[in-house]
Length: 635
Image (cartoon, rainbow, N blue to C red; front, side, top):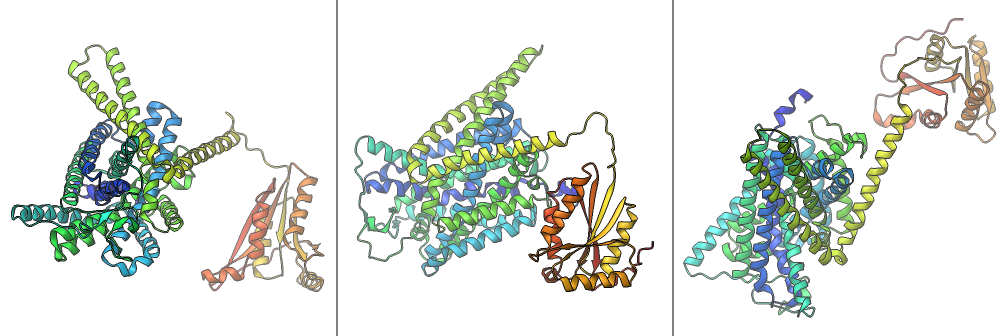
């Protein structure tokens, strides 16, 4: 696709919802289970607090959405945490937010895919031992789909997203009908008790509830994706992004609260390990919480399998939020020279192809390290989310303060406009305070369970980005031209043509070298075999080639080192001159033939690149294609 067709990739609201919101929508499928598992440390004693914890998570989600709604209006060109924090809190805060988001995006892909595969294995326990290769296969599939383009992938991903939402609301309606009809809901684990694994009195009880709340906050992952992707919306971009954010909040809150209520009504019991269950037969696999709720409401009927398929689908495709956020953020960082420039450019389909591939590789490595285990990966999750939330909202508070200062300096400013700005600032201040508090809770409760890995990874990534920027700045200073550009020619140009035998590629290389009008010209060969060297000398003389041939001795049968030593000696004798090394090379028609040719030339070129005052020129000769007639060099 041409760059001028970028506007064709802009998304309507109905398509932007699955593209940017699949992560927060899918999080409701395992957020309830995460709360129940955390509370199971105290047995069933604390299950009654699940409703209050879920309500707190829902309120927090609303607060964060309201805060980001201000961001999409204030930053119509994309107001991700990196941009907002950099502009308002300084570059250090911006890089901290960026490192948190990059780590979180990788975890989003890993956790989403692992959770989706876990849901599949709940319905088909026989394939549970193959969870890792299945997970890696889904990561590869997501990568390929996203490389096809944002709009194309969004149309495909819309099916599981809307299928999941439809199935969940049908489940709510059918559960309500059964409730009115007096039909009880009973989950598969309702008859099993849960054994407490720790004392839960006093302060420990508070810590247990805070840990459950931290687990439930996984429902907030991916909320910031829309603020990063405002430019991808159709016009009016900010309004459409805000409307999509509102729609996502409504769906996520209602589905999360509804699933939590049904889990409690049907007596779903979830534990950290099967050994905690009382009465569970040994070797019995425990389905996920949402799978148990589906079975309690529908039984093993059509809609049970509908929800199983679409829940697994949206859990896996929730990773698509990261596939949109990570490459875009990496491109912005590459533009600002904090990441390699290769991540800045768009590919053939106007997507950031290199960023997509990098994210896929990083997520696959994480899945391999943790064996695609959702319970292990979940503890690494959401730290980065709340770091970016807090910095972004704190940056917005500073942004509105600048707006108020600017309006105060202007005469005739509308008082109602200042009130709107002040209200926006209050909303973001509440968001920053609440998310900052949650960040402290999450760090405190999850640090020893695996969150320390993220705490270590973020500063390392931060330092890496600073190091890349220093490198680019140093190179830019070194390569900068002065006010007056002077094209100073080298004193002399010494041309060296490397030859192994006298054939048509050599003849073409000699002809090209003579066309350079060099001050000196000679052919150089390496005598790996004295007999071959003498044969080349005899052939050279018999054909009357009027370019002198120098034979370099190589007692250890090396080719590269004698050439390097000779080129260095030529340059040392005339430091202000330039040495041009001309290398004839075969150009083969098939990729597998490449391993049969040019290996010495590749090694020599790679080493000569690091030699000062040396230029290297390759003269190609096509193989298996009609060659251009070559003429022998004239005297």
